[in-house]
Length: 362
Image 1 (cartoon, rainbow, N blue to C red):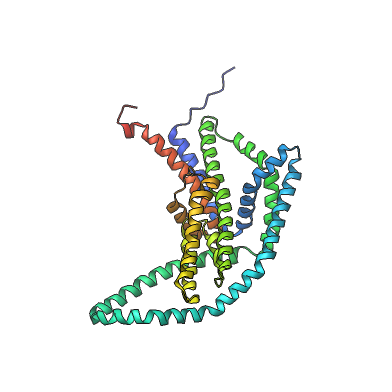
Image 2: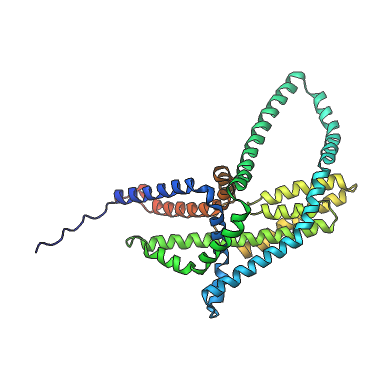
């Protein structure tokens, strides 16, 4: 009886070709299906954020399906309660802001006109013409680029996701993923190539630590900052203070963006609303205090200092995701950025110990 031939071992080049081809096919598939991905991505995000609470209930001897049901119902009730309480207030302030926006623009124009006229008198006609051309070109480029990103995000959300699919499909996806989370993780772990399984598990654990620290922690930071800004601005009777505070807190998911937008909007409105510079300073102090609380208390306690996601990298990922895939891309931006960041750090650590860096013989 002749022995069966032993297949030759896979070379590094063949393995690399196999995994690169698989990654390319996955990217193409996601790109082709991007029109239906949002409910599934939302359901996965909800399941990932609520999985630790479900695990804790399961350790208290509750069946996994019951723990997942209780956690999702509690999350839905809290979301509905927040909408019932906040939507009427936010709606009234948004309507007031839209109604008062022309008056605010006219007031800004009237206050800025003396400064602009004095600047024009100091410039020669040639310098003035060059300044107008440069300002028009740069402003048109920036506004067009920002408009393209924002339009891509919101038009994607409108065309790809209808309300019914989000309300019906997302809870179903979240429930089944939350119920079967441990089973899915164990099954995927069993599919890993045995030769590289320990390394892949270590990098997957690093990705999970990064995402857990940033997504779950940063979401709590955003909610807390939104409440702080909204309540504080409402307490000083700033017009549209609640809306500005909530928007600033929501945008704080992208580092520095929320605070900058909220600071500029609130100080600008305070400049027109109050006759006293003291109140303008109070409004500005609210955001400085919020930044101090975030930097010294909220972020160190809830996010930690070992997340490994640089603010510039997060800003770039969110804007790139919104430009490429609309609202779905925004949701996927941080997880993809975390995975890429972990893989880059792993590759860099291997490079620093390789002959390509040390110059030693392999």
